[in-house]
Length: 296
Ligand code: GUN
Image 1 (tube, rainbow, N blue to C red):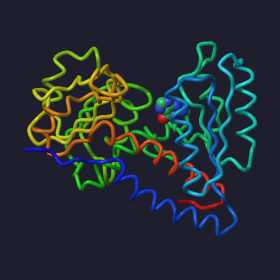
Image 2 (tube, helix red, strand yellow; image 1 turned 45 degrees about the horizontal axis):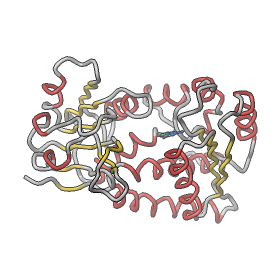
Image 3 (cartoon, rainbow, N blue to C red; image 1 turned 180 degrees about the vertical axis):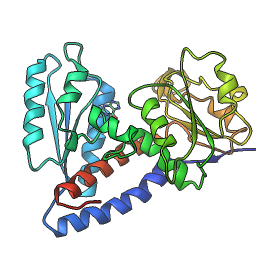
């Protein structure tokens, strides 16, 4: 079997066309959704992500602000910026790009963001709402993965979803989303991680395998059941002398081998990548609708 490819570009385009309609209807009422991003320091990958977020706002006709702070800024300076954005009526949602420089306390920073503007869904109030089944914002990458699964026609109810990795950004919220009651969820969920004993015996039970471990080509074909749906959230840069840059991006899944076993698979790049920004935009539009008094 060669797997069907699930491409983030295709799925995100569908969602963007729905978002454009919602943005148009907000604008018709005089409201332009506004998203701000704070970038502290000059981490090259973060710079690329932040630029892409600004460009997407522009393409969608949203208001966007990128606040660049030097890498030696103090925690107090960052906290004042957050307080300003919390109070700014033009900004419906904002995020602080991670990772932060070592002098900053990431937990304190996330806790300082007003939950109703926390479009990353990182604030404990929003994480708690997700766990209790009353989510306001959706965690962007896990929600993007869920949309890829659902919009490719994959049934999730009663299926065994195995999540590989237990990070706060992907693994934990991914598990919470898939075990919720309702469409696109209702799954039996197992989370495995670096300390799991006999991890392959569990990944082999997965009907849907979501991998966010941060280890290049960690999931090999022998760890995957025939016909499984495999979603690769990993992006790892590895040396490749045959590539003009001397390196290239690979996922956490050994794509070439696993695609022969899976029924559907996401490539890296081109798979989950575009979904994170897409779902972030969806959260920003939702925040604008809420501040406009819509209950949606
Ligand atoms: N760094 C890597 N991914 C993310 C993300 O989704 N949000 C933020 N704020 N920082 C990140």
